[in-house]
Image 1 (cartoon, helix red, strand yellow):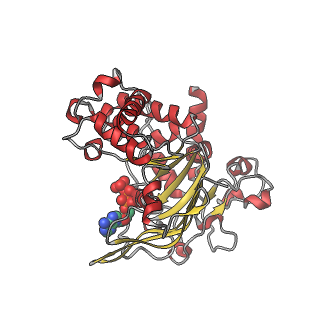
Image 2: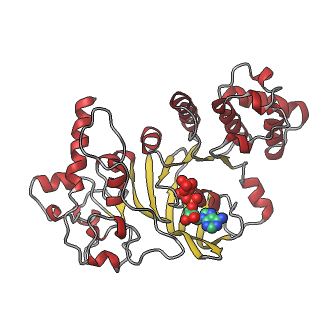
Image 3: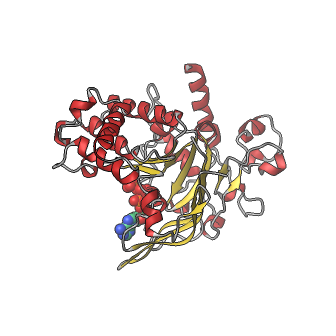
Length: 373
Ligand SMILES: Nc1ncnc2c1ncn2[C@@H]1O[C@H](COP(=O)(O)OP(=O)(O)OP(=O)(O)O)[C@@H](O)[C@H]1O
């Protein structure tokens, strides 16, 4: 049984401008000790998904459908007491801005100790000692002295470590980190990711929300790519980066600047994410997709298993891969069901006959990467 099982999740915001379909029919799982990256542009629904898992959506947001099970137990509709134990206890949270997570008028030690008191049966000195141990665990030098200081005495990176210490207070099985390194400089970011790496090695599952594919590539085992509230691709990190199967993922990857790369690359994917109060019909990505056909304007593509190795098949001339249609995992016999994409190019009975030529373009990157290593 997976630690976290999100199934057919729908989140809506009831606004004056209409009903915003912020998360639409989203499913994913996270195993114990696993690191899942959720990526996508601004407005994709990454944060709303994280908040939904913690049942922290504020008005006018509402979980409209689906199920979220943690350790086999349903979270949607759980009692307030159960949710309190879950939040910050079994599931730790780290959000982007440490300044908003820390209270300027209490010392760092008091704040971590308070989290310890709320989520464990430790009181008084035992809670304080545990707080100092947690500050030590997250790599804060001289933790006993630092515990007596106030948040403004901490740099951004150190403050974020304090937030991580608070998130660990209840000895969680899952840490949800939403853009935890955004705003930190690259060296500090790398150090914080090292810390998360170290914590994950202790069997802590991590759901890392990021718009930065580089961060996700370095840290995660699996990736979920979201576009306009929906999952458009799911794969292991290796498959996603070397064999992207959704045109949106390919676009995100081609927007990453690379050293020594003089190819004419897109700075960003042209266009913007749609207004989720009135998303485009059919595939939500079709207005921005260079491969869109008539069928894409009509049919919302389901996530289907795709074969990560299909490009090689096409090179050898076998199968139908040359026209961009990946063989379904079940047909190829390969265990590719872990790699899924929501694009009509992979739906057997779809009226789509284009050629997703980004396979070839990205393949060039793979060769570069192999040559570099
Ligand atoms: N309080 C709210 N009221 C109305 N709509 C909202 C609210 N909060 C979020 N949304 C909508 O939900 C959608 C998903 O937002 P979300 O913040 O999850 O995106 P994101 O992928 O995390 O983006 P970012 O990287 O900018 O944080 C967006 O279309 C957003 O406009």
